[in-house]
Length: 198
Image 1: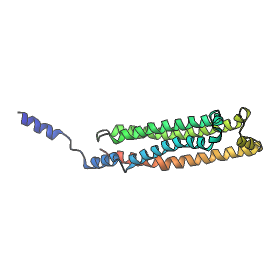
Image 2: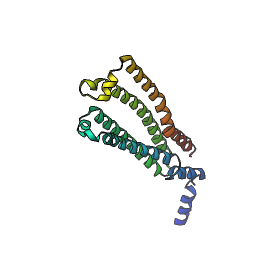
Image 3: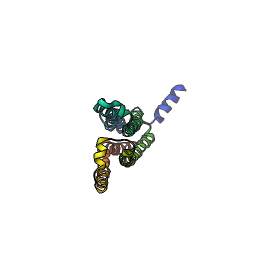
Image 4: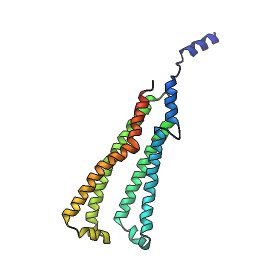
């Protein structure tokens, strides 16, 4: 009787589609594929944002006290820390996606959608941060004196506003392209691949 039950269970167990196995191998591979590329992009972002404040600090070693009292420096450190946390959270999502097994198509789709939303949120946040730094550049000289900012404020107001507008337009177009090249195309490919799973 037990042998008949085992045969029945064996016959009722669905055989995994060969295509699903190949797709999961592509997704789970540690060195190549869309998830590996996303992990590399997030790790580069973490490393870059970790190094930049140290470079700023090293460039001003002759007057470290002034750097530590600078609103601009601490604002930039907070910005870098925010980007690091954001990229680390995205990295963890991608790492978890690599360890999933083949029966979680819906979960993979949800994670991809979450990463897409977070990429769009990052673009919007970077625009807000640019606006914050523009306002900071205009207000800081009233509280702290920097040679560079004194020179900047000696320019006519219309020139400064034009420079800020140009920087805003440049950021608007560049952020979308950079995000598409580093993250967007991999997410699009993942959506196509996961859509082929059965």
